[in-house]
Amino acid sequence: MKTKEDMKNIEEKHNMTDEIKKSNELHETDLEAAAGGGTQNRYNPDVCGKYTKVAYECVGFLKFTWCDHYREKNLSPANTHAAAQRWQYSCAMGCYDYVGDYID
Image (cartoon, rainbow, N blue to C red):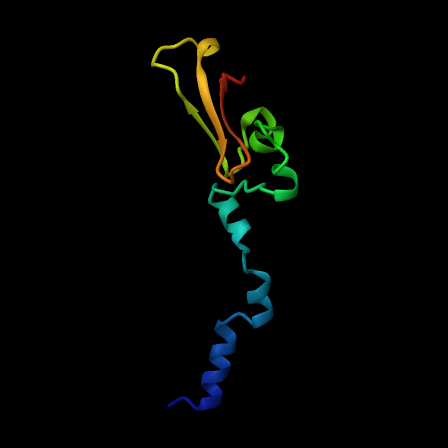
């Protein structure tokens, strides 16, 4: 039969210390990035509130990293040439909402 001291020694052997556990914890943003779904929430009321149209901060470099609040919707009929398309651009935070031509 194992004593309380034996059980404590076994537990210490098989478990990580609190310090090691803390160093191995992932922050929520790290976890999202590792899963491939990192957030792109760039909303800043002091900056974004001044925009009346889509800005670089809304869509990022080559439109690869959209802000979570950026929305665009194609209003053109199917098979419309890209140069003739009409789109609705909006910010979910209410900074802008307008209809315009295709932005490339």
